[in-house]
Length: 358
Image (cartoon, rainbow, N blue to C red; front, side):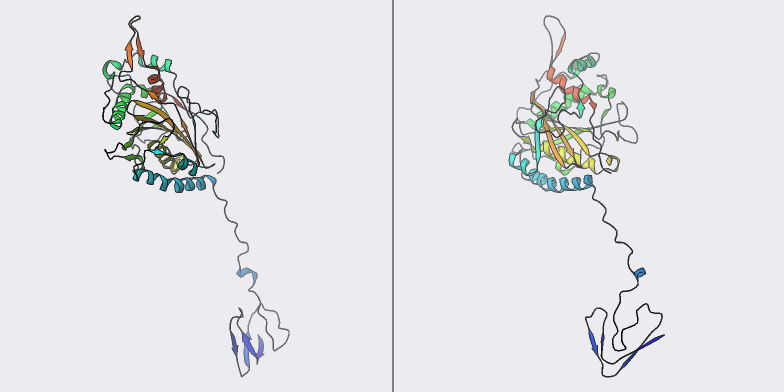
């Protein structure tokens, strides 16, 4: 035991408080690690022994680029999309796209190839549509036009006309017992859960601003008509197809609010799913209908590299009766653009969507 006698000032270890004393103070220290003071009237404070402190400050974990990008896009687009839906906006202005850093590029309607101008991965494709000639051979045995040959547009509403066109389209694709289940020969199937989100519809039925996303399809591991019991799609293919019918006419110079909201909302919805954690890119292909007009808007959203690109095809006009009989040859003739559109639902999900960091 070491005894120290102090008759001046006793200081606290942090030097924040001094206690003055008139009488000497005797301090007894047992098993101390402190060094001997230089004199009886001076006692210096020393750090606690090393074993009392962390041996090493842990280095912060590096941020996951995919998670960071997903949070950034969710935060940036969430408020903007809600504002567009709430204020009954029809189109997305160029200044808004610029502020959101969204690039709009061309898309070849017949082949699904991106037109390389300003595209981060030019010449790539995410869906390889079935060629129109193959589609025609595919549907000839079932002859769906005999039962579902045409649709009647609503003269007062592009919204309801688009809905009727979607109904005819799916009756051609998959409506027993009259057709040969065209979708059952592919890996695409309608997701029973559907696209559900407050950002995926605006049903006002006034001022021609209503729109709705419906008929979402996922890519499954094997062909079949209905989703498997576990409803588990092919996790190596995070691609989705979604149909949208909108009251706002399609405009070649503008992206519709319905198209942007559907692309981003479904990409975010897929991006947060655990079974999709291996992917950085989430392709969302929107079949956008308004009245008798249709176009493809394909979203290429990459959370790892944090970019949003919209690939937009030309607008096609679908006749009320997209088929006919050649008066000379007596052969069935189907509108070539309509065949190309069917080919998007019968095509193959392709492209590299995997992340490069883990």
